[in-house]
Amino acid sequence: MTEPTPPPPPPTPPSDSAPPPPPGGGSTPPPPTSGGGGAVSDNRTLMIVLSYLGPLCLIPLLAEKEDQEVQWHAKHGLVLLGVGIAIGVLYTFLSIISGGILGCVLAIVVVPIGLALFVIHIVCIFKGINGERFKLPVISDLPDQFSI
Image (tube, rainbow, N blue to C red; front, side):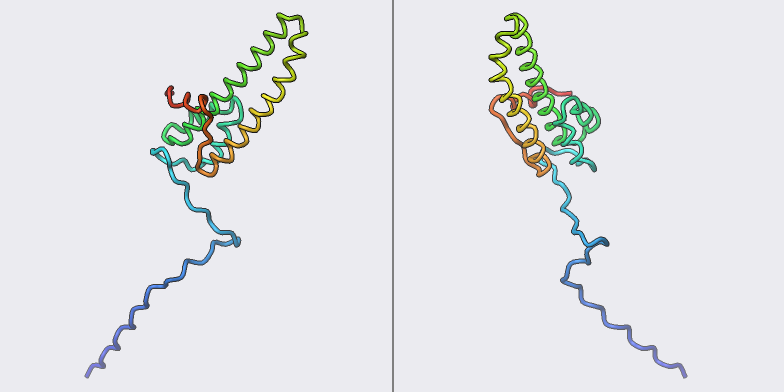
């Protein structure tokens, strides 16, 4: 005679608790969402930071063609760079043609504008990292008008 086989163990109910945290004790941040469509870059945070660091905005502009959010920030950083260069060229030109006198007077205006542009870059970086966009009245509309 053969012995009867024991019944299989009952299935374990699914657990309602979250999986254990990864080694190292930190929690994993949620994956970034793509606000503008397209593929999400693995190094989106780095590319958004580079977008607002002067000429380095060309790196994300040329390297991350699929990520529309990174593209927008890179174009926005390029426009802000152009605004800063235009202000510097205008200031230099006015200073030269006036023999330096007008340059001293304009420095009172140009230095706060330069500081404001620096603060705008910092705000854009933090907003971009958090998945938002910092829009300036006329300047922020320019990135949407050209494509690379």
